[in-house]
Image (cartoon, rainbow, N blue to C red; front, side, top):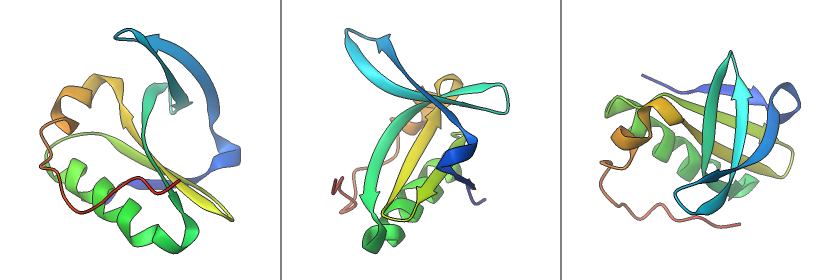
Length: 94
């Protein structure tokens, strides 16, 4: 399954405290998501590879985009599932 892709203008970003750190979050479709990775526009494939891998493991993922970057977000309800995705060569680039 593929993650839903949204314009970053359509989500509500915010900061929140989670496991002793300040995290970036966003709200979409009455669900709260945590930022998993930020990628430059030229690394779009890496963002989608990460999102698809997490979806395949059962996580709920959204990808937001603006002209210069892509952000991969994971639902707080399925964050524990996303953590099970094996480490790949996909790295945060921004």
